[in-house]
Length: 143
Image (tube, rainbow, N blue to C red; front, side):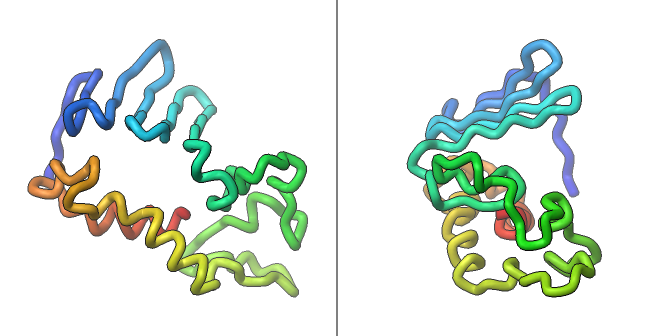
């Protein structure tokens, strides 16, 4: 894997993606409203409003009802999303539905992550230097 070290701030694709640091936090933000900041023991993710009701996972479902974000069939929230040895959602809990194998969710996640491989997308300028497939695969898995 080729490695490139850059000093922050970095503005990519004519400023559509920016990476910068303020204090103890590092930020990755896009011009379409998605951003991630991390530092200390905290990670903050901001998702654009038009993704409302279309996401799921460890951060909740973004349906406007925070009361159902941490509900799971087994009442073991973190364990629901645990992945080990490439066996998704297998945490050895009896009667645990394997939601990660739902094909409709896989198709939705592929569509959401396709922006990474899009030849006209905000990451297209990287495709000549970095193969986007591994990042796409990770995105689908995480979504």
